[in-house]
Length: 369
Length: 64
Image 1 (cartoon, each protein chain N blue to C red):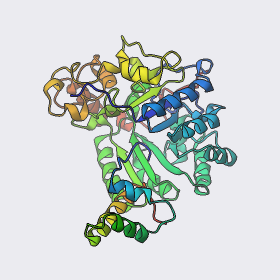
Image 2 (spheres, chains in turn red, purple; image 1 turned 180 degrees about the vertical axis):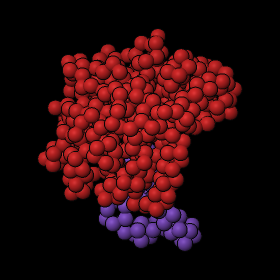
Image 3 (spheres, each protein chain N blue to C red; image 1 turned 90 degrees about the vertical axis):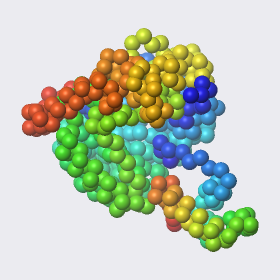
Image 4 (cartoon, each protein chain N blue to C red; image 1 turned 45 degrees about the vertical axis):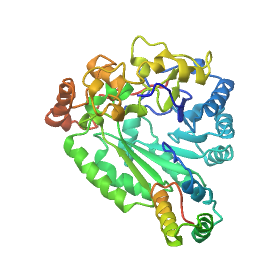
């Protein structure tokens, strides 16, 4: 494998961990960062310029809730004038028609709106907030304006049977892309996993429904779905490989190869307050650590798939196998796959399936002060 | 497009550049047939229509 590193294509700008929602599947770390320590506007402006110089094509403005930042218009404007494709990933809660218009004037290219369910009771239960009605209002406003829209339905055991209703909602909107994104188990989702992982039967039904919807809606809406990788035979090529395609900046300025990387012990992640993006991308030992193949253990080291899936996810290897250098335990070629099989067996055979939403022991993601 | 990028060169770049909200599909075909004057005009037309259909499926473009 080549040792030269090509430039990142996307910058994930985690502007804040503040959020009006408390989703039980949130992928933010359990250690949320405080408002007081967030990067100032000038630093983000510098970061967007450096990203464009480095060859980044797209900026994902996310969080928490990016609209919690009072400087969001300046950030959108700078990202756009720096030459980046600007995507806002939002709950929709802090929006109104005027604010939406200002965001578009500032140069927003794309808006991704999250949905926690198709039915209000489910959605509000999962987000711990009465948020669903506002999201429907946002859909109406979006129909009156010109911006690319993706709807993101976060899928798990408690709403996977609502996919047909979700499709109906999507079709009545102006979205040209819809993601049915099964929860991935990091952060708060990992803590709530027993209540979130769908059964095999639920998953199979959902795939059938979505495959036929994809065909039916071709040319009108692009449907993308991600199944929980616990049910796959081989692991996902996480982030397109560690330090290969993208860079994430946390609210306090740490540069990470992915949103969960800080759970891996022994790393020092550089901060954009002290280093340029280029310095970090090209010389950071943390970014370099899992690039190439030298770090790989068996079976990855000699596996035919290693340039395809890069051994899967480092953070998941840590979470499930206790070792960030190990093969992602999702992989059927590694003995630690037995752990994943046990988790799946518990969901498919056990009492968890009979749980209803009326007796939840959810761990809700708080709003950091 | 969100989470995807198109690597454009040669003909694909020339086609996408012309998806400007002003030109009709027929105009794009005619222009490319002039540029690729050594190619079989029917093939140029079919290739362009196929490519535009693929871009539309990916929702990268819309036909007005």
